[in-house]
Length: 515
Image (cartoon, rainbow, N blue to C red; front, top):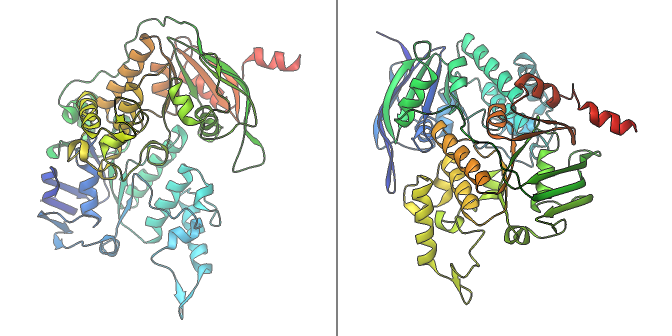
């Protein structure tokens, strides 16, 4: 008989209009990395939230080391040694790294906060596990990769032995992903037990011992990873065969749609400019991908393109019109669609209904309003069309509050809204972040469909596989400068990596700079 550190037996969790977990059983062995795989909205995060005490199940029981336990809230979970890194981090942005790590378990003496010992312990933990952080940095000033380190250190500081990672690599660079997977292996070797939610099959094959698959809230099966393949796992997840290659015909390139000349954008985190004198064009009928390690100016560059930030200098033209100083709405009306990097901050109004979010860029148009009043019947009809077309899963259909939806389905809603509205240029930043393999396959087909319809597509992605498979041209950004233009057909991932790390630059560029 197997000894399990955690057993979730016959768990059922319901929300209005949907059974998120339908009689699911999951068993975790001590010292193993157990992957939890499923489509967007399959119930993975809900199941882990039940284990962490954020939700209470209607049916079923949880056992730790064979004994039934009651987990009413996260404090109960922490007492039982259960910690969780959430998909969307639970950090206080105006607090420091140290303050976030000790929040809720603050060391004190006679009612006075004692930070000295806490700081010493945090530094020891960070050095021991290779999770270097600045204890005094404000959360709002550090990268998402660093924020994730803070979340992991929160668990370690509390001596958690059962670690839940919910989509931990969704916001990380390839290098950070490699580091995190190595850290997870070290945790397991120390005897910690890990539950690992991910859509990325390569990561499961690399680090997981076993994998449990959910589909539409139901348990499909648990397999030993060493005895299975990516293809078998993907079929268990979505119920059909998935193509891991992207089929596309030769690009039929047309007129210039986006023209960027000598664009410079300042940085909010340091004195140097984040984007330095960038010039390039994107034409109708092509997909251009901006590749680079996170933090090399991509965010500031896209913010300037889309109107979220004002550039210091330079010109941005859309279909020949100067858009440098135009508002976000003017850019939208003139044919720009934007799938943003941060779906919750810039893509959605979380407390609005799904139908309202799907017309955020169009609600003023005659189709959806008359004399200043919104035609809600028209909005709902349009939303239901997009929900069906893009397979957006939500408990109460178009009336669902977006905050309650899974991260992947929130992403699908943005993709649907931006692709479906009339546009000449589609700017897509991390368009498949947090999506399952079936949804990724669909989004890639939609991007290529836009290209083949004569639209210009500009993608910013940290996923090297996506960069190589989808793009017609690759621009590499390093320290705010374009250091290379590559053809995905003739380059390699290794060469791309050299450009991204700054180890290689276009010879032509260096010669022209010298002149």
